[in-house]
Image (cartoon, rainbow, N blue to C red; front, side):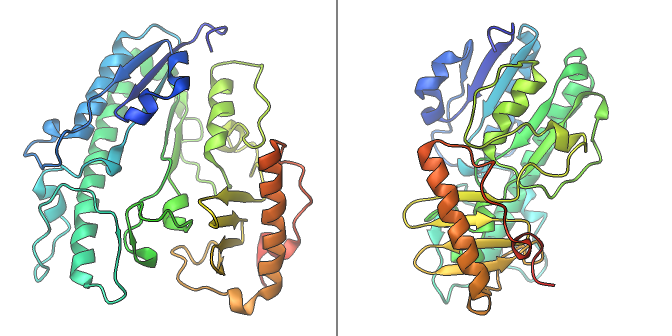
Length: 328
């Protein structure tokens, strides 16, 4: 980036990010103090998320152009401090009162858990997401009304999802590789509204962000990566997909493989879910699709071997049609 004349800024409220060895490669480091206690507030401007976005806007206004600003925020994982009316907006008559705690829940539910407990957590989460939506709206309005916005690419994503009771997990918990953890949002806003109405089912991953941003900044020399490719072709609808599979390596023995038609989750046992129909992965069909499970397990082993060797996963043996299109 430096050789291309692009100023780089890292803005974060995550201490692990700020203190990471690679953080020193940014031209400017903006550290935001995390909330010292989890407590709700009465005004949007007092929330931790709002303060983060205000600092991001201030940094954009003073930055030298051209620039790349990487904002890594703890977001929904740090504190749920949205004003109580945000969570009450999802309350209905007859429901228990929503919880007032700003603590982020993180636990495994008992098999006989109380549904009202989960309802309150979901209402609190929904209120915090509404706060995030409002902050994003203000941020985009700033870009729309600023000269900076005319030439700025905005990429919004998340390193992880937040389980809300699916498979009895609340929060990070044990990092089980189900869709609620690994299927995360990705929004790309290009100048001039290019691809603004597009929506893609392509399989993408965090490693795609680096080549995407390098292409946006006009950097032609790009590092060779085992995985990862620019997403601009998908956003512009020039290509439909970059890959036919994604392997996900978690804590031993947790592994997963995603294709357009299936999600294989292997830990103590193997679970198989049909995609995209089974969005919440409630119907495990592994016991009825032994051949598919075995084929996906082989493909997952090949994928992980390539990753561990630092070799490209782009030229792996092609998958059988049933692994791409599902059962007819």
